[in-house]
Image 1 (cartoon, rainbow, N blue to C red):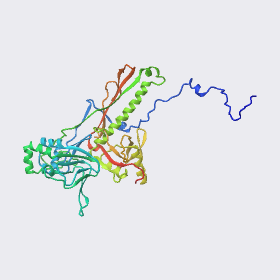
Image 2: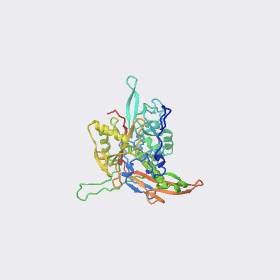
Image 3: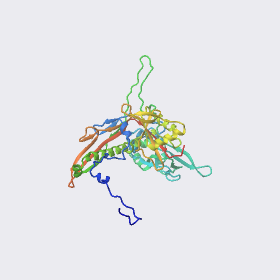
Image 4: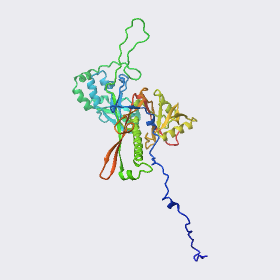
Length: 469
């Protein structure tokens, strides 16, 4: 028997069987398909009714809507672009009663859009005043001098208000107060030089400015739409009023957007490494998943058709205290008929749960496509990670009504396109280059349309941080 001459060393046992590392060379490994962490539930794509846009565009015709005579100026919002309705300029004292549409259109076209954040100064007290400001959205404080010489807020202006009318008539006008923004928002401004240029070319406007004629009020319904004349409860041979439904002369058109990428696969990979899984098929599957994620992001955030940017100013509300309370959700739902879904970032949904729990309330759950989802007042609350969260830990909650028949939100696509792989998604072979790489063009076409303004509402500036109730 051999004797260990070095007691301080440890003997290594001799291998008596095949190791697992060597055996694995002969085994067939069980493997999964390629996984992808970016994939989310994409509830928005699931719940939107998709409408065929055969011509690549979809036109939303609406009744003509404006309310001259209510003292507030109204605007048209198309994506991130905001325009004043030309006839709404009749709310300005100096234009009340002026009805030359061409001149009003020219004045509206000269208005310059300015987006602002909180704490910005639009006009400085004592500085030369050279333009009219029209507030499309947001709050602006009028800051003047108090009784003891300190600064004080003498007025608050909001959506539809204006200031500086005298500035376009008087070259020596100065601002009587400082206009400082209290929230983020948008203003339009009409410079004096542009107003004077249009005035000098319009004898009718020159005459009007001398006379300041009064504007007769036009009849509208409670939604601001041109009223349809009718009679009810009459007797005998009563002369019925004539009626017609006036339409918006410049209806919104939504063109299909596109998300595209080029998928590249080497021919050697496609030829030699296709067992047991088809490499091209799985490359394509993951590429399509990424495109669909991008599609949902665009439907929420795109400046031209995204729901956050296209929600009407009148359908945006602020939280009462910061966090998303039951009162906030109730107000959001109450501003529209037949709401179908609430959309919020998962962290916002967690904040909603905390606020409910703090009040001893527990949301019900409803069945949606075989899944149980939380609901408030019977309206499902769906997670959507594409809704942004700001660096201040605030986000938004969306509510929407869907469907053409219900005058809600619809998704737009076009099926039957060449090389269609999925509805409105094509995979087109682009050839093989000199490096033996196969290229495929993967394209997804889509958009979304809001048929009437109250189909979408937004609860803004929702605080989602912990520790506040």
